[in-house]
Image (cartoon, rainbow, N blue to C red; front, side, top):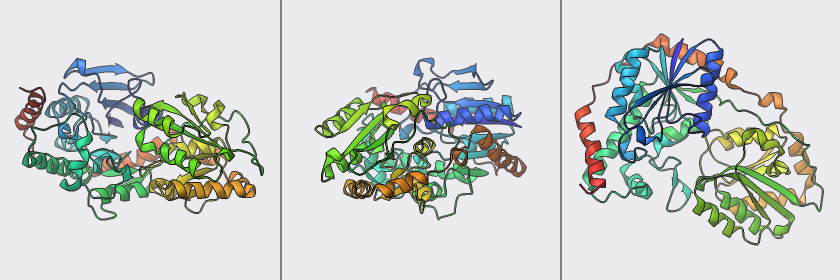
Length: 452
């Protein structure tokens, strides 16, 4: 089978969770005997409207399209006639059996519609909440609290005004038109998809609610993501009465990770010196990292830098008694949980999204009310006062073999989804887009941004 994967970025240029997951899948599909081509976005604006082909180390052909307009990650710029034209040409030349869209941002939000017009069925994977939120994570910037509002003019347009750049020239009618087209395009993409792949059912419900769709409206296939499990470098320390409870949390110093919830929970303990919080990760916004360090001043909190995944098991951040997450998002899966469990660590997680689904009723996890530092402090206090409870959590951590799900297993699961999509054929062809209008919109936006 020939499979064309679409994603907003691809390693080695971009190495986020979705990009790495797509790369892992591409390599596994090649090992399984399929032909794979990747159509990817890029941040390399200098190449301006060009399609560049490279070959990955796994033997995968990667076609990177460089957009030539300004701020192309902004939701106003979600539909691109130039990307659509380039993608249609790729489909005509490559003739894949199926298209698998992993993300639309930085490309164009009508990839599946374009594939349908080319006679190619498509599958969509929902890695995050971008399809139902203008600022991607369903967290309100003004309050830093999770958002349950359906995608709508009110409150979403006001919420998204934090995104750069400011657009004072945009009147309410034009912005509403852009919003309605944005939502309609994304709903149509998911309706045209022959399958919608999600890592958990809770994530499907998050997207459906966010788009104002009925529960079960999406034709979903649950396929968990592949993960490269870290190797243990040491035994998990045993926690005894009177010991300092060491807590680890890793990933990124990013606002949606809610590290301030962990810091505030330490402060809320009757005696903060009974714990040590160890953090590690890459810094997304230096100003946010600085605010976290200031917030933790005087507390037993250690800040370490980013790391290579293969190093994780030997780092101080994992030489702890348990892992804790402060995430403010409704996580779609939570690869950090797999990493923690592979290292033998029990976990403390917010009761929301995939975390709540995965940890419900298991002995190796404790849940607390999301964003509520005082409730997290309650859980930590209970473990401090009851070492046998923490020992039972540690003893219940699954064996490594039970956690193992690599790219080959994911590729095998998706192959049946692809076969179904191919058998179903392309959906009814949607109406042709107005390329001239879309190009004029794009140029007008850029001209007004530059004061022309």
